[in-house]
Structures are given as C-alpha cells and as structure tokens.
Image (cartoon, rainbow, N blue to C red):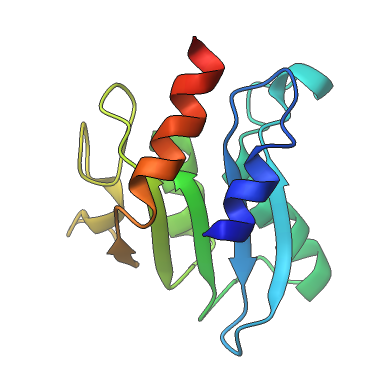
Length: 138
C-alpha cells in the first residue's frame, strides 16, 4: 500500500489514486495512477491503467492469482475490470462512499451472481489514503 500511495502522489492534475498489481510470487508487475486529465480518457483510472500494463507484460488478460492494491475503493468500472481480469485479491485503503463498488455504495466485487469474486481487504492505511484525497480536494 505504501508503494500505491507513492504512485498516487504522482497523479499531478488528477485525483490522486494509485494502484499496483502484484504477482502471486509477490513481484510488482505494474503500477498506475489516474491519467484521465493527462490523456483525456474517462477510463484512465489507476486500476485500469495498472491492469492494462500487467496484462501487456504477462501477455494475457487473465491475471489469475494476482493482487491489486489501490489507495481508494474501486468504482463500478474498475470493479468490473478487476472481476473480468480474474484478479484474486483486492486490497484498498480509503472507502469511497459516493462511487465505491467494493462494499460502500455497491459491492460488485463480492456479487454472488458473478462467476469470479476476488477476496477483498479494505481499510489498509485508510487514514493515509483518505488524507491524500482530502488534501487534493481542499
């Protein structure tokens, strides 16, 4: 999570969210931060950026056994991408009550109707992640 927080801090003009993808062996495969403003792409959320980079590196869309560590609870788009990429675990810092899809507003990641449900570990370094967001929006 500390690495994800460092990555988030590099977001510059965008909301400071950082994500890293870790292999089953514990190796950092990819990192991403929000790039919506930089690339003018509404889908360029930190999680999507990191997932695309990890999939490219591994040359497969299946990120079986991988873990995504993200500073803020994923939104519905990112939760969907996490499910579809078969990521095994989601670790996140701050809850996002307005758009969160890992338990606060929705719970896409643990929806029993889906064929893949990653393990979810919320609240890791929650206060540090929340402070990064508060600082940005001040």
